[in-house]
Length: 205
Image (cartoon, rainbow, N blue to C red):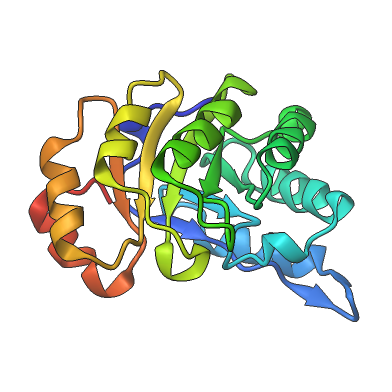
């Protein structure tokens, strides 16, 4: 299964990754997934809420496998994959090709604060490495760099870049993006406090 912008609607849950005694707690993970299945429109695994940057490759694999087995196709899964080095993010996306996810949530490179051209090239290289959906993750207060609307609109021309998780913390930028975004590019707010306002402006979820 892959995602289109029309699938990115409603409430998508960034799931925590439960651990017990230093190991992935698969029973609690399955219980969490069962609890929210049918109540949300999709799941995000291994992103910032799920401590994705602290997970090993083996833990990430089991995280996805347990969630997928528990859901049995009842809701789509998106995997968070991020990093400061483009080549390593590309490698991670390619390594995840065998996992049962519909797409990837990709944050801007953290700490290095590339230019807008550098950001565009970063996301283009990742999009070129997969035929699955790519969702941009604009969270400048954690990465140190803000994706401009012009950059996002340029990236929206890529067939498999289907939307953004918007945590820019600038209501004016968010409203401008919603107003200007093309068909086939979804805007999901990542801020609980602005959810109602974003929906009122035309966000997808």
